[in-house]
Length: 190
Image 1 (cartoon, rainbow, N blue to C red):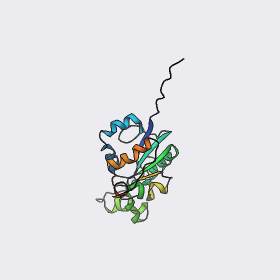
Image 2: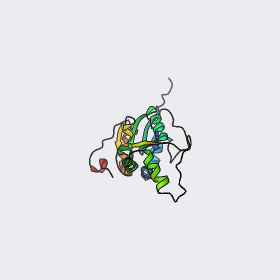
Image 3: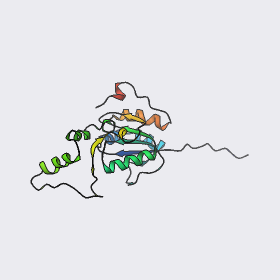
C-alpha cells in the first residue's frame, strides 16, 4: 500500500491595482507589517505596483484589490482586464468606491475644461496641452467609481482603509469565506 501524501492547498493568487488615486491605499496595505509574512504563506502576489514589475495583468487571479477611480483610457482598459481575469474584485478605498478626490474634476464637466485649466490657464505662459496618443492616456469625460465600469464583489471604504480593515477583508477571502463588513470600524468612509 502506497503512503497517502497530504494535499497541499494551492496558494491564492492575489493582485493589487492602482488606477486614478494617490497610492494611499497601497501604503496602508504595506502597514500590514508582520501579517504580510503570513500573507506570503497563503498567497502569491502576482500583480502589484508595490511588489511586482509585471506590465500585463495575469490570468486566473483569485482576489484583486483595486485602488482609485477610472479616470483615463489606460485605467478603463486595465479595469476591464482585471474583471475578466479575477474571481473576487475588491473596490479598495474611497476613490474606487465613489471616485472621491480624483472625481472632483467631474465638477469641471468634461476632460477639455480640466486640461485647459491645468495646462493653459495655470501655466506660466509656455503651457501646452499634452497630446501623445499611445504615450499619454486620454482622460475620460468623468472619473468613475469602479462599480460604474465593471461589477464589484466587495466594497472596502476608507481614505485610506486602515491595515486592520484591509486584513478584515483579505483574511476571510483567502480562506474562501466572505468578509463580514459591519460597524463603523469597517464601513466608515474617510
